[in-house]
Image 1 (cartoon, protein in one colour):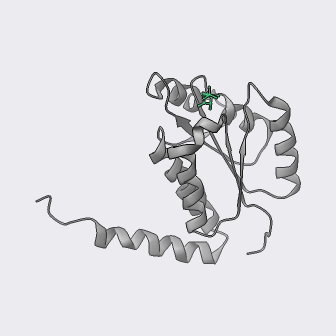
Image 2 (cartoon, protein in one colour):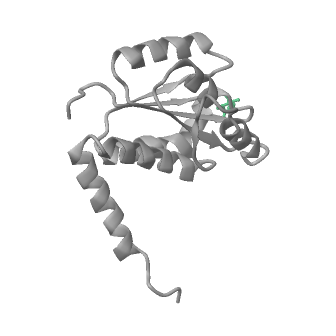
Length: 162
Ligand code: RP5
């Protein structure tokens, strides 16, 4: 790989977004050998940390940022507003089952896009897989691994439901 720095940044609004959710995002990136940084950064509670993180991310040529947050989930949107690095958003579960998080992540007004994934664990895994897919257009090793991973579904999924 040309870039020895972290290709992906995985940030989340709270430590509570890690267990059972964003840990799966990180595991998936690890499976594909994608170097990534993991940090707790809140748009509301630690805005300075976000600015610092993005300064470093741009300096070190980070290619994708995955931002997960719950409730009034502004992290992905604020991150996208501060950088031109593509941002993938993962809405995490909440008392409203993550619907609040989903809407506040996905409903960006035109101009500043956030590529939003599903709520919770599925979204966390898919954010990693989408990042892998984007990177696969530039990194041959990742492309080969992704194709192998996809081909496994052919064997895993039964042809009949009974
Ligand atoms: C958001 O608020 C976080 O992303 C988390 O999903 C939610 C609750 O945070 P905690 O109260 O668990 O720290 O900012």
